Image 1 (cartoon, helix red, strand yellow):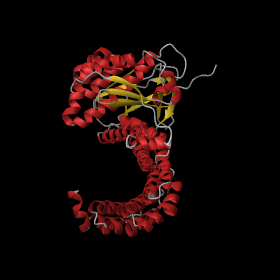
Image 2 (cartoon, helix red, strand yellow):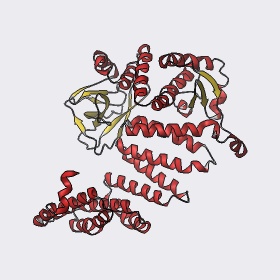
Image 3 (cartoon, rainbow, N blue to C red):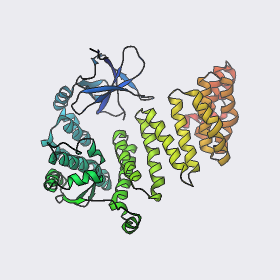
Image 4 (cartoon, rainbow, N blue to C red):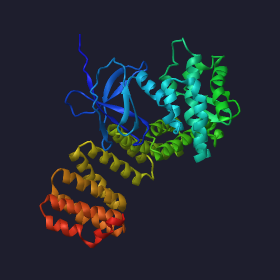
Length: 457
């Protein structure tokens, strides 16, 4: 019998940097330097371990040294405050969270997340009311978007799965992710692939099941009861699409734009997992609307956003792929030259973070930098020069790095009158001089008049 390899718990990562919050348990195999996360199945067991790159996210090392293997119960973690955390199986964490419920009531959205984690469906409605009030006080439009894009779709998908229970076929947890839910006022409609719609359309009890599932939610929000208005089928031909505008594809484009705005809102709040989910759904819709040329750039913008979000959660391989895909998407647009270069540059930055210095340096020097200079995209050109210099520093090519910082990057920032970046570049020059043993020269740079502004930055 093959012995399964155990992974050792080594610490926790808090992707949003705020507490209280659910945090990510981090593992290692033996003495390996690779950091791992659990891949958790629907049964709550560990299916496998997957490598993760946390980059500049701090790893909070903990004394627990639990070892688990695939097939074991997954571990969860919650951080109440720095150095105040709980790690364990879902049942154990649920018990801890129940005992400290009063601490979480000041955070309505987190409290709602905790109740769902604990499976306390009877308390969710009241928590939804408080969460809705909390968001509405900050921004009424955000509260509406939250209800329509975050709260209702999962409930509709759950109702569909419940109505279909006990039957084998297309409807399962995975296929439900291909179903979109559109809310207009108190009308709820579903957009599904044709094969899934054909199956669902035969379920006579489905409308009542969905409306029952949403009944408590409407009451919690003080709204009229939601009504299932059927399937919102995309137009099938160019002529039908033309007649359907501006309601392109039965509102799917509008729905995707709402998802994209929601993703950007979550990103601005540091809620990266939710932002990734919303942006991914938006991209799937944009890309499914064939022949919609006007959506080409917004779809590419969405891919770029996903690249930024992947970096934020330490998923560097995914980030690089997103940026590379974005560059290809912009290349297909006649006006996408500058955006192509920015996407290629961001991909190169990720390549540097992955430690592939030679590959990144070749791309930056031979391709990206000459094109940025030719198009006079000066801020991005200066940023690219900074990346080149940092790679040369990492490779201990200090004289070459000094030349890049001093004779190429610094003049651009002075030309742009960017005081902050000028001072930062002088700091890089000083670091290069110190690495070359030229301490006196570095001291002169650090004490130059240009550095006097440092204290005000």
